[in-house]
Length: 255
Image (cartoon, rainbow, N blue to C red):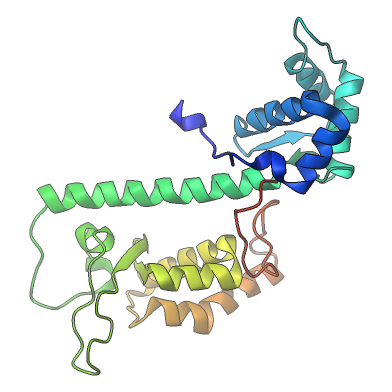
C-alpha cells in the first residue's frame, strides 16, 4: 500500500556495513534485517522498544516452515545489528534504523508539499481572483499565492535580478526559492530548518509582519532563536534527525 511505502536502494547490498553483515550472517541475516526494517516502517515513530516483548514478536516474524528463531536469538541478532554492524542505533529504551528515519523524513516533506500544492491548485481554480491593488499583509497572502510557485516581480534595481527564481511556500507565510531552501538544509540539517520555518511562520502570524527575504531573516536571527530554544530546553531534537554538525544531512547512504 502506498501509505506503507519506503524507498530502498537497488545496490543496498553493496553498502560496507551490509556487505559485512551478508558475509558473516549470509542471506538469512540480510533477509531478517530487511524484514525488521519493514516492521520499523509500520510503527508510528519508526522505532521499536528495546524490551523482551519485542524480541518475542520479531522471533515470530523470523520463524517459518524452513527456519525458526527464538526470542533469545532475536535479541542476539538485534544487538549485533546495533553493536557489530552499526545498521541500527539505540538508546536505553528503543532502537531504530537511521537510514529509514532519513528516508521517511524526506518522503513526508514531499507529501506535505504536494498536499499544500493540491490545496492551492483547488483554490486557484475555484477561489476568488487575486486582488491587484498591491496592498498585502502577512495574513492576506492567498493560498494561490502561497503554493503556485509565484515568480517574484521584476525589480528595477539590477537587470534581471531574481529573474526565473520561483518561490515555494514551505509554510503558510514562509516562502523561499528551492535554492535557498537547499542552502539552509545543507548548512543546518532538515530538522532545524523545519523548526526555523515554523518559528518564522508563527512570528509573522502573531505580529502581522512581512519580510523582504525570508531566507535572510532565517539566516540573520531565526536560526539563533531556534538554537536558543534548544539550549533552554523549550524544544528537543528527536532521535534520528540530522545532526546539526553534519553539514550535509544526506539521505544517500544505504544504512
